[in-house]
Length: 79
Image (cartoon, rainbow, N blue to C red; front, side, top):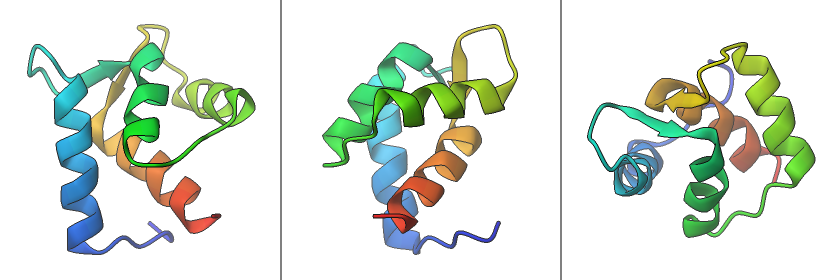
């Protein structure tokens, strides 16, 4: 991954992700993605979120932590 995060950042992202992963299955809904980012003090635009969801290519409406981590790294490094 070209967008490096510190261990501290990864831990913070994991804690935020887990807060919204209510059933503990390692995924959140795409609808919850915006809430997770907001809880981290970020404000991705609807366009950013839609682009990310399209990049996932999945139709199940779920985001895994590794996908979320990649998205977050790109978003945090452009701020």
